[in-house]
Image (tube, rainbow, N blue to C red; front, side, top):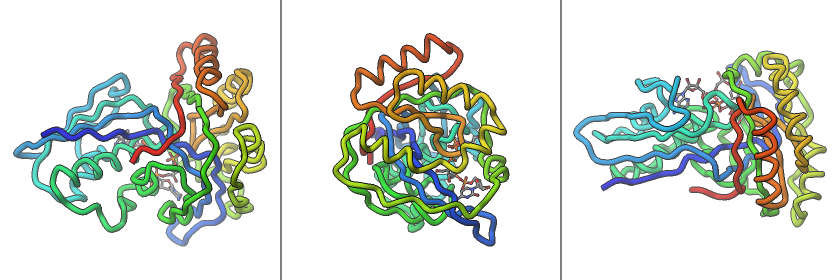
Amino acid sequence: MAIEAFAPAKVNLTLHVTGQRADGYHLLESLVVFVGVGDRITVSEAADLRLAVTGPRAEGVPTGPENLVLKAASLLGGVGAQIVLDKHLPAAAGIGGGSSDAAATLRALSQLWNLDLPADNGLSLGADVPVCLRAAPCLMSGVGEVLTEVPVLPPLWMVLVNPGGEVPTPAVFKGLARKDNPPMAPVPAGLDAPAFAAWLSTQRNDLEPPARAVAPVITDVLDAIAGAGALLARMSGSGATCFGLYADAESAACAAAQIKEKAPAWWVDHGALGSFS
Ligand SMILES: C[C@@](CO)(OP(=O)(O)O)[C@H](O)COP(=O)(O)OP(=O)(O)OC[C@H]1O[C@@H](n2ccc(N)nc2=O)[C@H](O)[C@@H]1O
Ligand SMILES: Nc1ncnc2c1ncn2[C@@H]1O[C@H](COP(=O)(O)OP(=O)(O)O)[C@@H](O)[C@H]1O
């Protein structure tokens, strides 16, 4: 029996850094969504634990025990499985590729092995794993472990753009000018896509300035997205991937084609926001 699980890109529509814990981890308030662009995990029965990494973004992804997929399998504690990770998302890119892979692995293997999901929802694997396990829009706070429902968002489409080159998350947090930034406002209900994007533009990603300092090309990416008619252009997570928001599928597809033509070396993809768990 083979079980497949989708690992969608995680996008932080907002990311406010509001404090820092004694252990160094930062307190966040983030409206997190998921896009229909991502990796695919397939698990099947085997005598021992094996991982194969395939797909257009497989290069450079670790295949040993440091891969979050194998860490997730160990955390679950089952016996053997053949795992294939079909990699489409760029790594260390602020869209939770590794975390979403870990969450999809937990989902698929808990079914294959008939085991409960871990009590911490995978937090010990990474701060983004619990939200990726949910794989639906929600408000993330604490260091990533507190997940709260949000009002239904309007239908939205997204273009994702990554200029290449990994941006390590710790370096970006380290570059923050302040740790105690103002909190996020409550997420409003009942807005259409343009009004919702206008509200988002009053909120922030506090990691954008330090990420731009680490990777100045992020400014070019944001300019390219804004120039392609987005309702909002912003960076996700600790970067360097940035997103553009659109009110319909056709506008997102046109914008993606326009950006690809302008910068053929960049990774560009597009999809609808949704729930994937
Ligand atoms: C910034 C965010 C926003 O969603 O996304 P990405 O840019 O990674 O996608 C996440 O909080 C990242 O989550 P994740 O990548 O799972 O983090 P972890 O592996 O647990 O931590 C990597 C490093 O990021 C820093 N870190 C992470 C989370 C947090 N709340 N405070 C932190 O200071 C720490 O320096 C930590 O050593
Ligand atoms: N399955 C995986 N896919 C991508 N990267 C992985 C994976 N497992 C471990 N890693 C390591 O995790 C690091 C962070 O990757 P990722 O979760 O994609 O980034 P981010 O935290 O910026 O969203 C990478 O540098 C990579 O070496």
